[in-house]
Every structure is written in C-alpha cells, then in structure tokens.
Amino acid sequence: MKKLILNIALVLALVVSVSSCREVKEGAEGAADAVENAAGEAGDAIEDAAEATGDAIEDAADATGDAIKDGADAVKEGAEGAVDAAGNAVDAAGNAIKDGANSVKEGAKDIATDAKDAVNGAADKAKEEGSKALNNAADKLKKDN
Image (tube, rainbow, N blue to C red; front, top):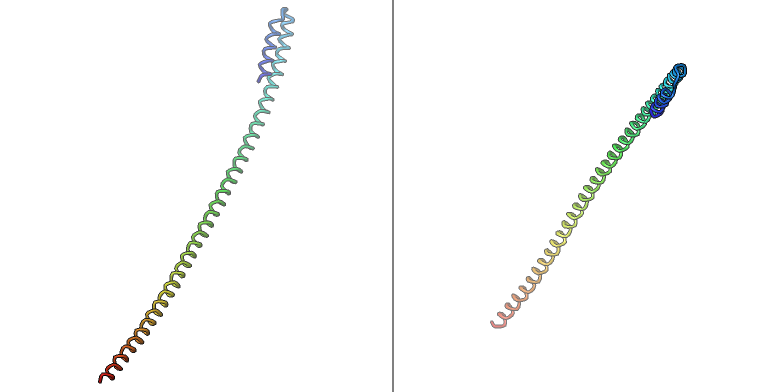
C-alpha cells in the first residue's frame, strides 16, 4: 500500500515537473506505465497479504481446536481421577466404620464375659459364705441343745 502511494506521488511529481507537451506526453506515458506497474505490484502485494492472512487464520484455528481438545481431555481425566479418589475415600471410610463396629462388638463381648465371670464369682462366693454361715449357725444350735 505504501508503494502504491509513493508511486502515485512520484508520478504526480513527474507530471508537475514536465514543461513541454512532448515531454508531458512522454512523461504521461511514463507515468501511466509507472501507475500501471505500481497497481500491478499493489495487487500482488494484496494477494500475498490475503494468502498470508488466510494461512495465519487456518493455523490459529487449528491451534485453538487442538488447545480446546487438549483442555477437554485434561478436564475429563481430572474428573475421572476425582471420581476414583472419591470412591476410594468412600471405600476407606466404609472399611473404617466396619472395623470400628467390629472392635465395639468385640469389646462389648469382652465386657459381657467379664461381667458374667464377676457375677458368677460373686454368686459362688456368696454361696460359700452363706453355706459357712449356715453351717456355723447349725453348729451353734447343736452345741446349745
């Protein structure tokens, strides 16, 4: 575009500087050729710029599509990992609850067994003491009679 403007300015400068008709005619022909050449060069430059712009747009579109696809894949993988981690956490929590329940159950059984043993021991001791007291009372009655 700059070349076109510069060429036109050059042509105008040439036209103004020519003083004779013959020179004006020759200058005009030269200026016409120069304008024609400048227009051709400008057209070529515009075509090259359009091609370069089209290529850049295609490359940008491809890169954007690839980036979007990669981003979507990363999000999908992250979500799958989060689901797996959540599932593992739920499994671990379930196992911990089950283990805790089993421990409580075993502890309750142990307490019940200990309580039963204590009650049985106390009952046996009470029987022995009661038996001794009864025997002592019976002996005392026998002595008094």
